[in-house]
Length: 238
Image 1 (cartoon, rainbow, N blue to C red):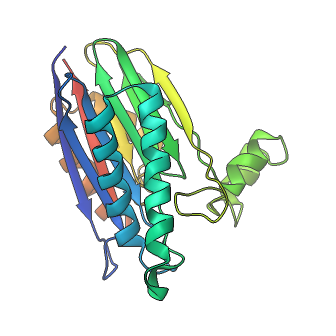
Image 2 (cartoon, helix red, strand yellow):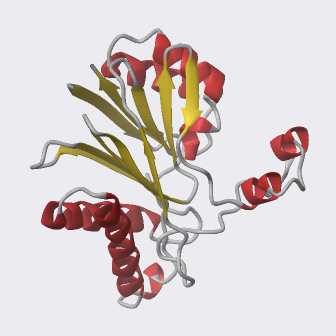
């Protein structure tokens, strides 16, 4: 199966872009994509996201691409951020989300921490592959918020896990099958808070290439009035 990809990262209205991303083909043939959103307002979010992705990639290049190595790569990234926090006071609270996928003929392997997202669009449908580690998502899953209450809940984006947290982060593995025609999407919240699932599905189903999709999503975010950095990786299986 052939995988093509396209990506962008835009600072939006902010002076510093705290988002980072990367995409590469592993020696064993998997196409790996990773996205990270440094936590704003804490200082060093841009450094945290860059460091997380660098450490994650280094781990996978050393140990190969497996479900176990992807989770350990995320843990290595967490430890690297924690160590970096001790070297400069200005970096002592830096943290980041991280969401990554590896695509091959065997399917999709993924790892996730925070509220960046992995999504798959297939035919006329779209499905989230990752679940936000946020206060709002936890309360919604527990049945303490209705769908309508969740939509307007003021603290729904408060993160309950991130790499670099003082407590042990929540790191989820996920997997899914992969078919020709699938579009696998990684986004930071600057994208998916504006381009909601239904619109994303429409854009994915009517964009013939990954480049076309990322271009159209970037325009849609700009039209929606971004308030944050916004970044995306789109991978097309053919």
